[in-house]
Image (cartoon, rainbow, N blue to C red; front, side):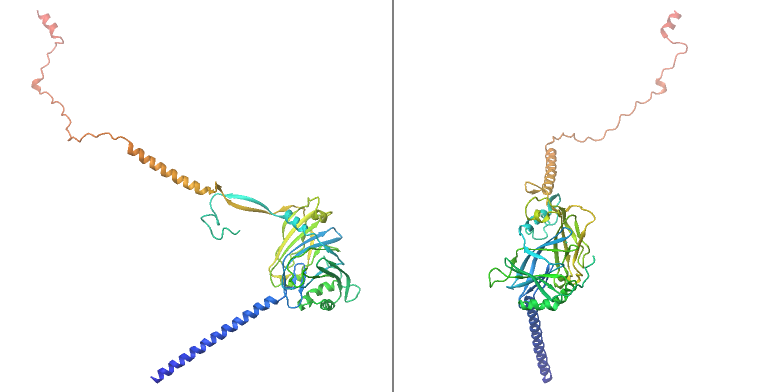
Length: 421
């Protein structure tokens, strides 16, 4: 008995230890998840397809959407960018590497509205008779919801960081820099209130080696004390270059999949020279600009062929360089067509339902009419059955006694009598 009680006490003690261990493990997991979530909330987003974004302090900034236009006339390149940003940072430094010295001005927001209208896919309806998914009665979800060789890397040495121009454009404080040392660029950013992350320092080194310049912009909200968020005014950069290029190298720092939407304006249809580590670039629109007025017609003057390119980067760390654009083999035009499948209806009722219902109704009506006709047909009376009768027997043959004997030599009895007399 004592041994049994001791065993019971041991089991209770072991159960208490297990419960305490489970609570401890649960608490550890909860603390780890909270720390991970908090780290994600304060982690800055450095990379976007158009350069790098560096927030002040431990704040966060993300680029929710970016649109860019690259215009190339054989000697000069123009890039017009519009960003939509979110986060809690009140000040952000945006760094854009460019091959040569650039001029910067504000762009026209209506440019992108025109581009959206021109390159929008064509919507065409395609009717089907039998129901498909999301058609009644095959509802499978919520039916109500509905794309050369670089220049020699070294040139004559100059000052580590040189501010070649500074200007104020609306809410933007724009500084144009040259840098021959990533560390010097880090020092300039630090003196202006921004800390250059080590990963970004390494990503900028190839541009420093190629003697590229930088457009550095301080983004600040128009109302002090509020986070920088929403769609910003477009920035318009112009610079000379030997070949059209769109900087993408900094996007390899992103920790989430990246998507590129790029408009190209040139004399001919353009295409990326390589996928640079992403999915295969796809052309979503190709055609000549027909607008006679407006910001798109103004920008397209001398470069009338518009190419819209889309590309996905599911693994940004594989991005191997910048996009070099080249002339496509042919100036073929293209526009996306989206077919919207619609169930064929008559007065709002599915045609298949009317057909099936009509066929069933016709079959029922035919069967009913046939039954009615059979019920109204007159019946003829039938004679009562008679016992079977025997067929009449043939007449009996006469006996030999009853057959008269023939008279020899007499054909006509009357003549014979006359001869005898």
